[in-house]
Length: 254
Image 1 (tube, rainbow, N blue to C red):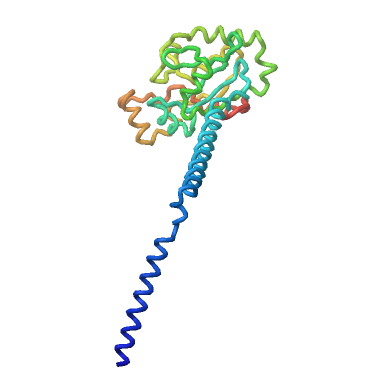
Image 2 (cartoon, helix red, strand yellow; image 1 turned 60 degrees about the vertical axis):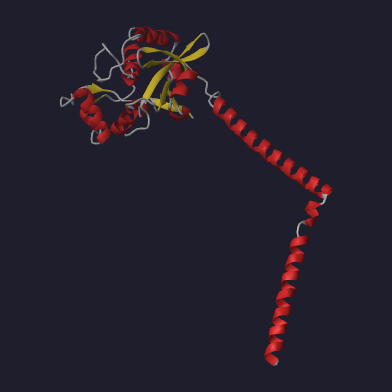
């Protein structure tokens, strides 16, 4: 008898629990189903999403503006030397061989009030500064200048640099890094212009054997261009050597 009563009470408790749950399910968030409340809730949710969307778009626009104009505070001067990480096929090999992040460079000249980069690509030419920056990896670049530029880079000196550089204009890029004027590569162009125009050696000359040639990528480039006949004693000048020149000071980096 006692056992039967216990079972009866247990059944009543289960029924009571189910009834309570159904009651809760019927009333939970039932206020949302009221037309006016639902309308207000939807309006607040929509406005919240709009505010969030506007905020995100504003942040993106701000970042774009900063990215586009962040180098405008750089004031180019004739003779500035500018460095970047190129996106060319040989860039990474140059970086590994010279232990530097820089693989391309040029000289800044002002023409009709606008800055250009005189560079050895294919062929040697003047490139608008903004175009040159856009070509580099991440649009990052660094500018260095002679520590005594005001004294050395007089109008006559700049004219002499332009005169020397003019002789290289239109020449092919030198894939073999030879120390001749028949073809020319980027750091060679900068070094020879400074040496021949103002008698300054911006960077220490090296030979091929001075570089780190152990990396597989570097070795692959060597085989492609030189086969088994790498001219290890060929005189060369690298972007990293010019970058480390004690004659230069960094004036801008982005």
